[in-house]
Image (cartoon, rainbow, N blue to C red; front, side, top):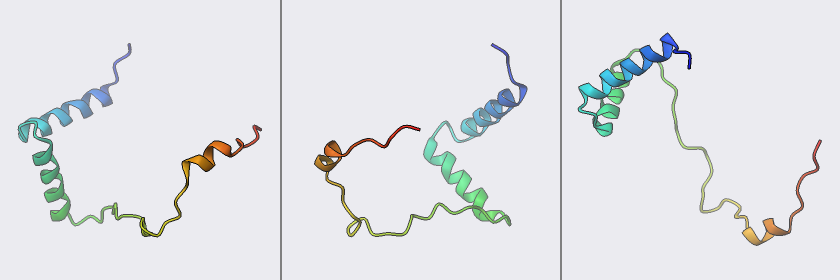
Length: 73
């Protein structure tokens, strides 16, 4: 298998960051959140999608069994 220098570098950085946090995923993400909050850069939001799951249309699994598959192109 051919080694990719970029992938090797990313993996080394990932390991160093994890090592700094004692390989604790919760500490690692706390560190990421701290870096994000202290950064002047605007970051993408992973806000929940709009819509209330309580009022969303529910699909009955029994109905799916009776449906016909879409035609193949």
